[in-house]
Length: 411
Image 1: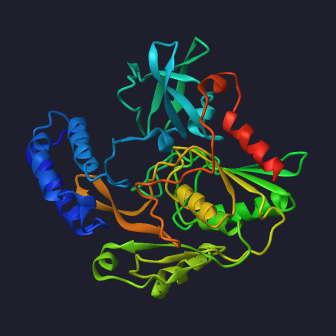
Image 2: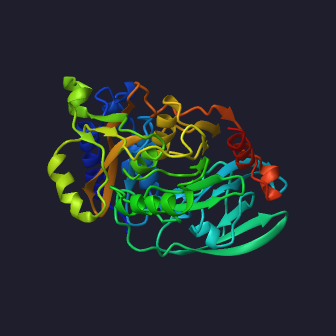
């Protein structure tokens, strides 16, 4: 689709108005939104291609320095964590110097099914060499060819992005295996959570219950790996509920209206139970109708053998709800956090139509932990810092996981 100048102007006006009205921070993170739009206007309207138009809108939105802002269309390229279930590190390699290297390759995701492993070097996408100055992105609904290097041996791979239509157009993604679990001989349970799928997360929560009942319930220690987890929905509450026996406040969201008028967090409605079936959604819809400021509380699942002996593995690609889990565990002393600092990308967002098949996602609420920490823009610091090692990954060794196992076994 080629956009005319009047069409670009119409979309820009709609974007300007929606952000002005709905952005959760009335102070716009200290920026002048109208001034940002005015400075960007000519570049947006005079873009020579649709791709350049989308890039100029994206550049304009980044000036607000907030996660969750983005323009999405039918052909918009998606970040690799959502598109191919993988994340990258920028590394100096023997394959032409600085390159993007696969770091997190999530279980049964698009990249893993194509045969990609951590430590593989990305050389080209769809016949175009990938420069370190541009982060790779991918267009959904296509078969895309990749060239990767493993130990200097080049491979031509095909990745399949013909995923079903996304359930939520404001967050299109290919879905990896959300939960994988195993138990070692030392009675250490290992749980990897790659994604919190669904807005309410009913299916995810039921699957997590089954995992703990059938595999992890009797383990003495627990290692939870949420590296590369891009976040998702409220299903993260079920994971947090397994970390503590009683009902305990996690934090609360605050929308634009509450931020401007003031609020008492104790009077906000409380969400502390994920329903077992979709029949419960109607009850939730009635209880929280029109309410964007809500307290999250754990569900009171009772004591577990591993309580007090939990290690949580995070990295710079653990975002959104994954960061909420990390912050809750850290500030309540429920787990030892291992890995690298998370990026600080956590804000409640909604999508709004802007015409011609485009939507804009806008952060409409800030999340504040019960002890007053803001994750957005700050991230979560690990208790034990363990950087990812490209050289070890090339040899099939996961340095961060090995250290986490060592710490867990010593608890």
